Image (tube, rainbow, N blue to C red):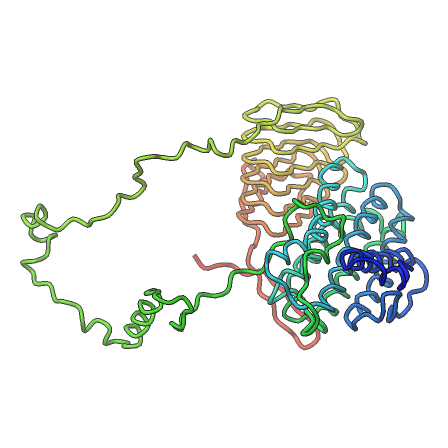
Length: 485
């Protein structure tokens, strides 16, 4: 595989480097193309033996990743297209691991270039979800899109493993929807969920063993160069995955920059703090006749603090003119089985009355608007809206409130489930027929449920936001707690 040794010997040094790069790429692509078959040890390749942690990564690729790809192909449609993008993402990550296993860590600028292929793959996966919001497999796409940033662990020192766990948890909100929809219908989708989540579980175990505090680079060999990045990476590509936070401030005073008085100031501050109760000993006592609040005559002669006035500027910046926001046109239409209500601003009389049981409603980026839905409908989703009011009769599926601020929901008939996720401020008015409704919430605040009384008034009750978890010897027990006001 790849150019033979005689050809490399007769080539120029630059051509030899390019041939070596092509050879490594061919090995990686060949290994990924054989993922659906029995996985080998991956210990050797045409390019020579790979490191132990590359072999361990290959075990993940030939195991849960290959199973996920196979099941995605079986499901087909957008899920299969998404899986092909994920395959490329893991391919890009493996190439970077090979580079790190044989090279010393480069400068930040070079590292940014090396991370670009992985970053580009992550962005491609997320963009595909955003471009296919009307897909019948939207929950599958969302599960992958919300968690694919986990591949950015390579830039998340010193705690890459908790980062991957956080991304896995983000996926579970949507994988639970997939399970709910297909648990009694199609086992393939249930197996797909298990295979996909196991990828991130195995990746966490892998990171704990080989990259506990961040991507492990070789202690020997040449320093990695930008030429080690795959040629497919664009010169001005998308930014890499988010890097680690800045190092903590050096409070020891041993600053490498000569002439920096900041360290001396900090040392003086800590020396003063260490005085404990004696810290006030250096303060000057102010007598009664020197206090301006008791002697109005002193106020006119009191020294005025020098320095610029707050918020004063001789050249004030133009209000938000540097980054204008493009206002999208409002949408209110029936597209197939889906009612689209998008970009409405100040629309208080939006009414959908020609409904059918198979139809769904999707409201997106609406502000200070009210939507009323008459009749019985399949499901309703309110996404990214602010100060949004929703009134509806009957829903046979679920009502979802996602990424909203200050939403008010009123049920006139029946609804089995209301889901509130990543929302700040949500009031739900239940009807007498919807008191058995299940309300599921996550990462939300200021949620209140209003239950009707016999006299027609409502009793308002808050949804818990704080929880207490204890270990009972066998399992974790979680209960809601109330914050004392």
